[in-house]
View 1: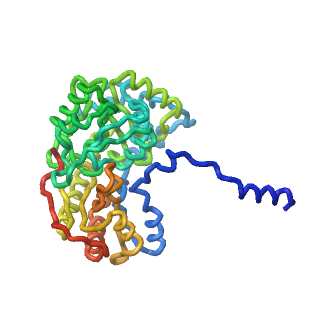
View 2: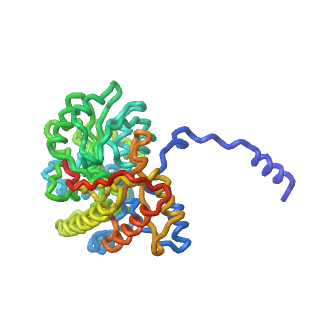
View 3: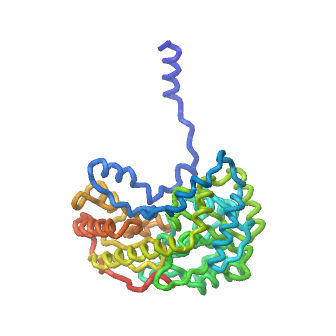
Length: 427
């Protein structure tokens, strides 16, 4: 190599690196994926890993829709309108009508999954430094989305002993400060499985209207309510056209996480105009995903009914197994496909790492999501985990076998009184 290049290389190695942004360096890790390298290492060593850490269902994406997709393909995969294809938005209008929700195609903006839908909604609804009230535990990525938008999450605590019921509306009112601009809920809830009663939602809607707040509701699990619980969309609440913002997605409903199709649905025209600016900057939502979604929305509900029945079986099995484990505090989730439980352990992060690094039972182990990532309050969730019952009952049974054995021999085992809460997680 010429001496000039050697000198250049030496100087380049000594040159200081550009500093990264504070935002980037302090963005929270995803608790679902942060231990993925350990899981990969365990698999490489021959250990089977049962993934209960992430809401990736093992249920088939509607096979008929997948078969029909090729017939819908066009010669050029072109940009769609920034708001999404009109044909898809019209089918979504028909879908919401099943839930007695009357919206127009113009009130629906197709997004790249619920993640983009929520991220852009935070950008559009809040200024940097403003805050949003969120019951905790909450979907862990809310922490990251709020951090990127420079919005502060102000948490209100929910308790496992109460089935993660929402705090009284008076607690929300008391928590409103001069920089509070909204309330963010997930209904049915991820990670707790709680389903919120129509009366509760109505009272929060009234509070939002009285205090000039946005009511943002993540409704991606609306199909999965059990034990007769009634789902009511925030879009059905009266006199809240300017307040309500609904976040939606087909990822979990149709086991189509990779389609990356979500939506923001709101009657607030000014908000839609701002969201439209963001949408046009990112050009368009995924074209293939939109075509697939159109086909899936033609389903006669038979697919969704079968999927709901399957999750209900899994829910019962996981609850019964957890109820038999010494020192575990659990409850029967009323919706979604998650269980958030308290374990007799010293530290959930340490326990979840130990499962992947140092434990196996009959050649297998289980991957869970540590509880602290689902809170904004420091120190909360230290002995809690989230489990997604996204595996069939046979694999779930093996995973529960692994978990039961692990809790018996974990070096940091604690022994509080176990509690099995038989009531459903529906208010």
